[in-house]
Image 1 (cartoon, rainbow, N blue to C red):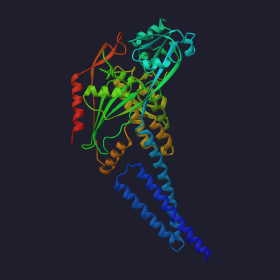
Image 2 (cartoon, rainbow, N blue to C red):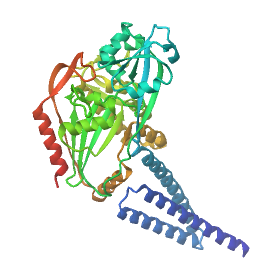
Image 3 (tube, helix red, strand yellow):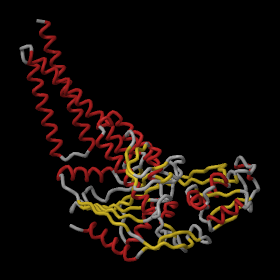
Image 4 (cartoon, helix red, strand yellow):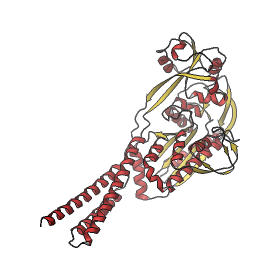
Length: 473
C-alpha cells in the first residue's frame, strides 16, 4: 500500500513539474511581446491539451500508458527548456540591442611625426599644437594635461601639412578626420604617431515612441568603414540610405545617396561638404542633413559598422560572393579577387565590402559589394541549421553590427502586425545621382577635392517618392 501511495505521489509531482515548466515557457514567450494574442492563445491551448494528455496517461493503471505519459512529459520538459532558453536569449538581445544608441563618443588624438622624439603628452609642454576650429572641447580637456601654444586652423590638410613640414610640433584632431586625410595622403600611417587619445562621451536624448501604434517610418541608415571598430565612435557616414516603410500599404522604399554628395551640413555655415563628412559631427547631424536635403522627417536612425561583418561571416563559416571583375584587394594585401565566385572568410568579406579603388564607379560599386556580402551572409544564416548551436555568438555578432535609437516597442508592433496579417511586402529602391566636380569643402576650404553636385531633378523626384510612400493610405 505504501509503495502504491509513493508511486501516486511521484506521478503527481511529475505532472506538476510538467505543468509548471509549460507555464514558464508561455511566460517567456509573452515577455518577448512579439506574438499576436491569437498565437499566444493557440500555444497555451496546445500546451494545456498536451499536459492533460500526459496527466491522463500517467494516471492510467496499465503498464504501457504511464510509460508513454512519462516519455511525453520528458519531451515536454525538454521542449519547454529549449523555448525558455532561446526566448530568454532573444529577450536579452532585444533589450540590449534595440534603443541602444544612447551616446556617441568623440575621440581626439594628439599626433606627432613618427620620427620625432615625443613619446608622452607631457613631452609637448611649451610646444606648438595645431587644432581645427570648433574643436575647443577636446582642446580644453587636453590643456588640463599639458600647456601648449595653440594655433587654430580651418583646413584639415593645411593642419596636417604644417605638421609634416615641421611648422608645428603636434596636432590635436578628431580621430574621424584621419580617414579623410588618409584618402589623399596614403602614407599617413608611416608618417605620424599617436601619443595621446582622449574620449568624450556625448549622451543622446532617449527616443520615446509618440504612441504605441503602427505607423509609417523613415529610418536613416548610416554605414561606416572607419578605422575604428567601435560603432559608438563618431565617424564618416560612407553609406547613406533612407528606409521608408509603410505598414498600411505594405510598401518599402530604399533610397541610396552617394557619400560624396555636395550638401550643406546641418548646423554648419559657409562652404558645403561631402555628405560622408557630416558623420564626423555625429549621426544626429547626418540625419538632420538628410532631412534638410529631401524636406522629410527622419523618425529613427541605424548606424552600421562594416568591421563587425568580419566576425559575423566567420561565425557562419564563410560565404561565397560573385565578383564581376578580377582585382588585387586594396584593404587585404596579397589577396586577389577573381572574376566569378569567390570563397570568403570574414577578413576577405570585409575587404571586399570596403573596396572602391578597383572600380571606375568607385563608391557606387562599393554599395553593390556591400549588398552582396550582406545578402550572402543572411542567406547562410537562414540555411545553416547548425547555427542554432551558436545562437549566443550569432546574436552577439548581430548586435555588434549596429547601433540604433529604434525602441523595442516599435519593432514589437511591426512584428505582431506582420505575424497577424502575413502580408506580402512590395520593395522598391532608388538612387539619386549627380555630377562630379573638384571643389573646396567645409573641412578643407583651401584644398579642392572630388565631390558630387546633386542633380536637383533627382533630389526632387526622390523627395516626392519618399513622401508618396510615407503618406499613402
